Length: 67
Image 1 (cartoon, rainbow, N blue to C red):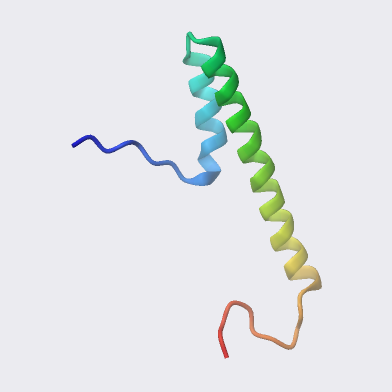
Image 2: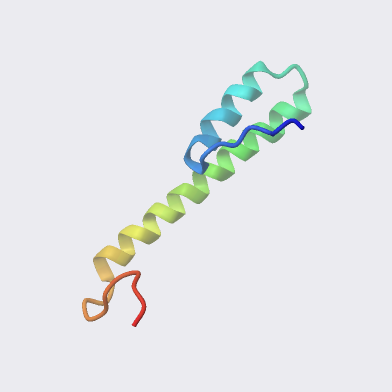
């Protein structure tokens, strides 16, 4: 059984851009470009969320740990 390739989320944008350049189908190239753009937007939002948590997070609670 063939296993599809898996990529880490931060590599998805670069992989989609590369594949869109190699693709001969214009529609598929457009979809891959949108995947690249969307993944970059999501990664930026995630990074901003982590930064805001670090800057404005509660100092009373331990981060990421249960009670």
